Image 1: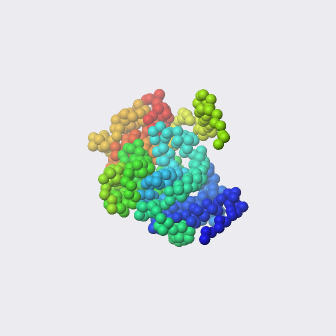
Image 2: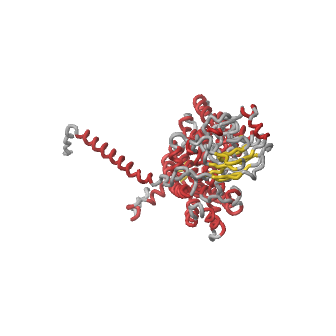
Image 3: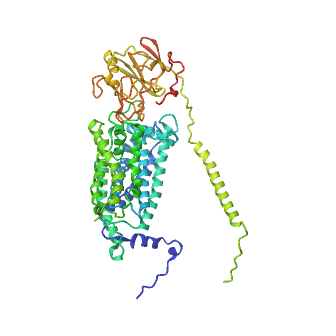
Length: 387
Length: 210
């Protein structure tokens, strides 16, 4: 007996939000074989929400002026009630955001989630990564400590040397001859404008996901309803449990190890005459920093650092194989993990002083990263035999 | 179906296309024009010319092998008094072979400092302490300390090396030698930074790169 159609209610006739929610978040068919790596998108959404909330309340107490910025951040840490918590949540959030981003991207690389029909999902995701990087850079300058100052100096000078667009862009950000008040104010505006722009692109990313549906570890899209499960209650409860574990790690970082990933030099106010001896980027920029240092040419280093991300954008056209997961591609199953190791090695190298050993490690790792994407992937997708 | 289709007048669609194109083009032009004042507001409003301020520095307290930092034009200026060993090290052929621009061909110094020691007088070196890679301030390594046995400048940001005369090492990412500011010796132990008696036409705004 067919269930009689319910007459749509007052709200439904005017704005069908409830039926859209039901369709996209309750009845939405999910592949039944997703593994834990498919929870990282949910982690990213939750972390982003924590960043926006803590960021808004930090902005209320922050002063974007070079004479007061450092003191206002110290006041947030020491005088504003619960200010220490907001700042710790915001700083720890950056680490959680980047860790989840890199795992989320690695998951997509391993299971071939960038392939048709999910190219736009992949490209909006990479766009989000770039936007998060710009936002993280701008945010790191705001406390106006030594690391803030010299990090900003290096990045703005690097932008300046990019042919054609570099000079106008860096002058736009700097707004003066030297890194000073104008630049700090502009980076503050850039920081929170980008945060809201990220929200908009997340909406696009999620909308694209709901059109093309999630990939799964087998790489074969489910064809019958038997191969799917409704999003609620199956994946809501599973993501909910995964989120509890994730929040435990996040809370551990916020409450027990707030200084684990910060550098002591950033608690010294910016001094344009002295560069700290032990200057290091934050861990999430270390792989690109290692590339910049490993190439004995300024433009070359910049091009390769940017190129290491550009190859990801080009991946849908470099890898033409219709087989998605690396698990079913014998050569990719070897080459891709080595690329992951290269990325991690570059990160470790970037955190160490540039001794000969670390320079060699950086160069080898960098070479493999590019060989994997530019040589192995196109060649393998031409002639591999998949299982 | 009683709907009667009147055929479009000859050239009618063409005229409509033209109107659409013209409207879109004008709209875009208007949007671009409107963007001009917005972008203008972001321009650097402060005076961009370098001040012609000079700075006199007394060097009488500087012993051989020592270095000091003063501030001129918002830049850190390194002043070092060189020992005979440091000067000898600058001329070693083995060392010169490791440099990018050993003969100071790039315009990074006034004419009176375009020499093997890149200074007006061999026993004093004066350099703008800003790495030509990405703008950090290098630190002075005394002779004998690692990694440059002959002493020099080491940039903590990306590991660029400069010798005691500010000449950049080939294996470093920095592209140019450290800039030399215009310097005039007023007496044996007193210099004026900002004016060069040996190259009066020299201006810091002409050099390759700070």
